[in-house]
Length: 314
Image (tube, rainbow, N blue to C red; front, side):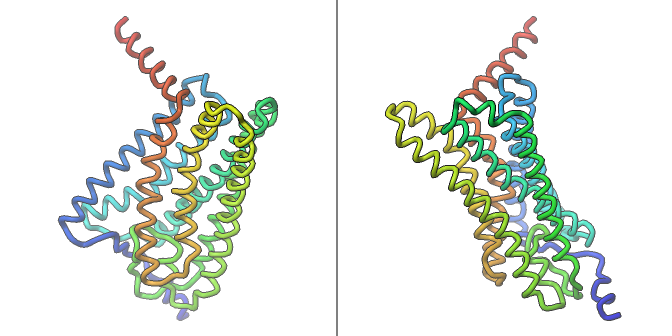
């Protein structure tokens, strides 16, 4: 009966980032701008890759998936945060908190796995170019993408079940701007050491394995690049890889720091800062990172833009 009373609370309160009115307004407009840039940038990349048949290649298939994930990844947390900053209503229902945690980790883990698939794609393209289209056939790319979503689904489901199977007490203030594993577990009126250990181990299996596979791919790529005599060709290979590596270190590197450390008051504060980077800034930067140095995407943008301009003139 005591356990049922503990779980009777209907909502949590997200403490957010700050209670200072002036700072709340400043953060609202800053993050709103980032969010709009994220939505516009990733939606544009997704549409561009679908519309331009010259971009129907494995590399851009994965990039379209990445843009799709970034679009919804931010949407699981940022609109609620913006609403709290503007209106001041920081309440979230138990069901809403459960759903937010589930979809946040589903999309986040799927993105990490997708970045791993993209590193394998770069390895095949650079180290085995003659067999590239045979190895990275459409069915192979689809199977890799489906595997990313399936593993992400199982990972997120396990983390959500572990977190919300516990009884929760009357203290319901979450020290974060969205529902995440560590700050939610801090509110459980039960010993959570085993739960924190299990969630960390599950996370480590996914994050460390993906990061390791990416590093191994780039070790092979690096050894191949050293054997290229032409400095021009080396720069071209390096240029093709820097965008992907930048996103990997911004995203997976931040996630490793956030979820593998112990849950303390200081770590929760640090995690909030890391979460802003992962959920607000990185998804907004990804369209720029992948397009600024990509000649094919830039060429495709100009082609579609000028074609539309010509249609208007006629």
